[in-house]
Image 1 (cartoon, rainbow, N blue to C red):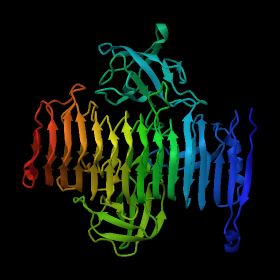
Image 2: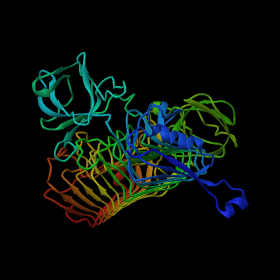
Image 3: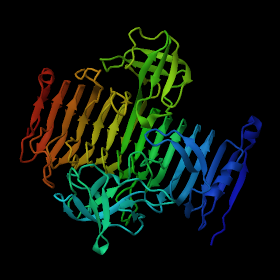
Image 4: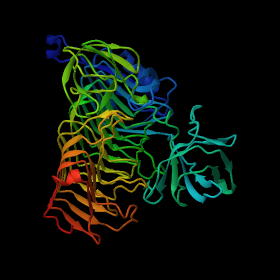
Length: 601
């Protein structure tokens, strides 16, 4: 067995001494067949520099939650509370991790990495995985919708669960199990991707019983029963199924992850909130080769909330997660009460936004007045008075708009990023490839996409998630879309559909200036573009081929469906297939629609 050691090596150049700067502190880690959590904790706690580098000798490292650093965490789009963290990095000028191809294997409820209030973050050549996934998986061997049961042959190798008092308990790790199966989805056993025509299910069986041959029978009425031969995967109830991301970056800047691979996570893979300038290159959230699992992260592969600066996601691979490949958005808060001419109390609306830092002193804020969803005046935050996790009082430098009333929403202008995704592969997962909601320049180019739902999705909303970001400048070009929108719910390759509360006008144009150019779309179905409330949409130079490699799910749907749009151009596209693509256009859109020089239309 290798011995465990860490070495603190102080490196300080002559220039550092002259300038009075802190020395860089280097921590060396060597692997062992034991719990590395207390070793890493001690190494971090004794470090006395705010410039830290960790060098991990190549090997396999095991982490358990028992002796982990613990902290109360507010994590956007996850469950808040006490979290056990293996690598907690806070208030550092610089943190760098050299992984040397090491594998970090976690057990139980843990957050592998937290980077909070760090001035520079670098990590490379690391693989993150769990010994036991927080999912349940089994093969569907029989279904009887009339008697309302399904028979499942559960996976046992590498999975953990038990049957007790007529109910299934999983993952049954360190005393934790989900109260019921919860979010459940069918996967194609051969392709290891979401099954064709699958539907999200919320499973809560009234009884589970053992049958012959290791089969479990689940008694439950379902909207749609899975096909025999598919693999049915569950990830637990919504209250507990997002413990923490594998990597959480909060209030930090100058972030660079290179060749960081996540095979499993108890929430999102990479989550960045209120952080400035980030690059992911050669990173991945996907299954380990040869595994019997079908789930990588239990939520988004990557997620950027109220970030700013330039975000680049390049040459990455995102597969088999249970939510989007990436989601880039801001946050709407709702006006609760206008206190005086300069002060307003606002409310964070979604239950997974509690404790989120919506604004800081000096931030510029947009005001959005009902019923118009468009951004109006801008004001600067002068002071902030937190009330609790849901409410905060904001005082502004200039007087508030006179027509500001409860129910209006505010959006942070300062914390909006540019976003680029190029050279990536996103496929075999639940939900959308990319969800885009930033007003600044966005480029999506030279990627390979395959999606259960819409591949590219625009949905700012003042309704449920309260994720802001009406777009103004988006270029989607030279991508390949293959086998998209194969959910039982109706989607399109490109979908633009704001979701606004009932107090907002449902006809006002929301998103602007979206170009979908020179892409290749290989589709088994009809819907290509489905757009609502867009001003300035160009569909140009694309090649669309009917592949015929799967059953059409929506054979009567239009290829191009435009509602309440202005300045739409569909030009110079080529369509190859047996069926002529059909347009559905309302009277408002038709006034400014240009559709010309298309082949096969």
